Amino acid sequence: MFAGFMMNTWAVATIVAPVAGIVGFFVVLRGSAFPAHAIPKGAFAGAAGASLLGISTLAGLAAFSLLGAIGIGALGRRARSDVATALALVMMLALGAAFLSRTTQYEPEIYALLFGEILGVSSTELLPVAILGAICIAAVGLLYRPLMLSSVVPEVAGAKGIRSRRMEICFLIVVALATAMTVPVVGALLIFSLMIGPPAAARSLTSRPVLAMLLSVAFALVTVWAAIAASYACNWPVGFFVGVFAALCYGAGRAWAAWHRSRATRDPGLRLLAAADHA
Amino acid sequence: MHQIWTWVFEPGFFSSAPVHVAVVTGGVAAIVSAVTGVFTVMRGQSFAGHALGDVSAAGGSGALLVGLNPLLGFVGLGIFGAGVMDMIGVRRVRGRDLATGIVLGAAIGLSALFLYLDTATGATSGAPQQILFGSIFSITSGTIPVVVIFSLISLASIALAWRPLLLATVSPDIAAARGVRVRVVGLLYMLALAVSVGLSSLAVGAILSTALLIGPAAIALRVTRTAGRALATACLTGIGTTWLGILLAYDSYYWGAGHQGLPVSFFIVALIFAGYLLSGLPAARIAAGRRETASHAAASPARDQIAA
Image (cartoon, rainbow over all chains, first blue to last red; front, side, top):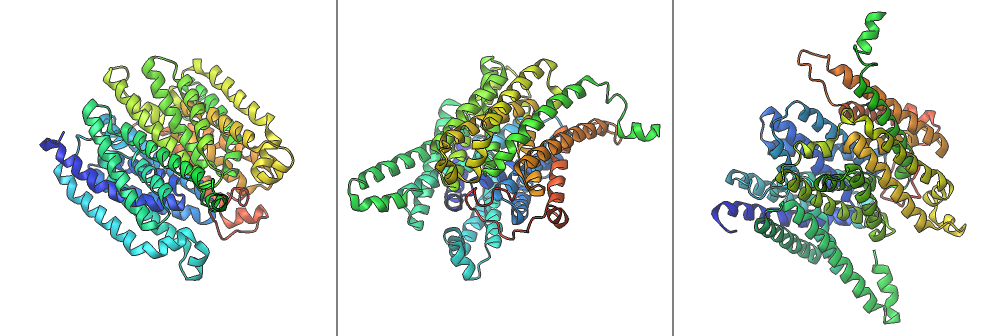
């Protein structure tokens, strides 16, 4: 499985997983699971449209994921965030359906865009993916303090002049960029599994942010590597393994947290602390 | 006069059989989705409402694979998924959406597997698009009775639990104090949601399933003040946008020289989206007599359940 044509796949996965792990840490922290699902899904509509017009799929992905992020942010200004996300998502999907209705030709591509394809990675994709990944991580690094503050203690952030609306839109844009770079290999529907399963497991193990982010990266790498290996071994789609392994990650994290809690509650003095930890 | 009529209703609209089926199926889906949707928006469960659509689609692919009726797969896996979401979801909203996301991810993975096995065994082509987008014009008249029956079941379960559900949604603590089994009511709601979303996904496709669930309900909750009026407004909005969308989609085949037309889902979603934007205008809010809330926060459902 380490033959020449597979090396691109391993390379992209190794670039994608850390980005998913780091951005995913904040997705879980902020409870943004729905946007993390909606943005890639809506971006798929744009990729379909781009294919139709003959433009690069990656460009269509990037454009529509940004459109989705801004749409969710804009609608969410005066409404519940989950309603805003749902409506922005269906509008983009409807546009995608409209694009797709214009042509009947590319079913295999649709499947790969949605669910990922380990054999479909060409060398020309490596550089743009790496650049987008670097931009994402740089953005998280730049925004780290205000993002942490507005995620954990929004009132304190507000007092320091950090506008939560603005941080929300910035964060959604970062998610959009992370989405666009990761759709190849993992696919639009499953990139979000990488962004919530491994980070959730990491947060179950520790609440210290930097450590959690490192663990999140580690778990994401293991998840995607295992998925590629399994997919190569039995020919089943890589997306299936990503979804299942990410769920196993999450489950393992919950199990660990529950076990840890039950151990702690044997000491009555620690019962309060454990109860406070339980999220 | 006649020209205006044919401009609005292109020839053959009222006599077309697929249109009849679409109007009935779409109308039923709109009503059930609107009723379920009002509670969904109030409970802040939009993600679950959307996710169950994808979970149902996975069930549909699986059913196709083993040769069962897709409807069984849609509703069956939907109910199972809803149960798991309710079981592992914790009380706080963030944890609950995370649980929804995990179940969704696993279900999408299953979808990928089933679709792959489907096409590998050479069973059906066009399966991905069919499952994902659905087509309101391709429902056979044979499935109408099944759709209607499942809809009635879903509506009946909500009607039975109407009062405790509303109380548990608006204020879980008061409900608990009054003896309402909040957890049980929550689970029943999730199961009703699964049935509703499962059948609407099959009938009108995944996109419209979510749009009809969330859109009309969100619009109604913005412009009305009581739950009863919200339900009525949501139903009317749902039916209105659905039927108008069907008409526009039918007419669109006559627009331009291409004679291709655009999908029904596109028109219905566009109408709902436009309606939502309009309902957010200051005029609509003032007419509803509601004070504008400037901040939205990721708060508990009880706090901002009415402001949609």
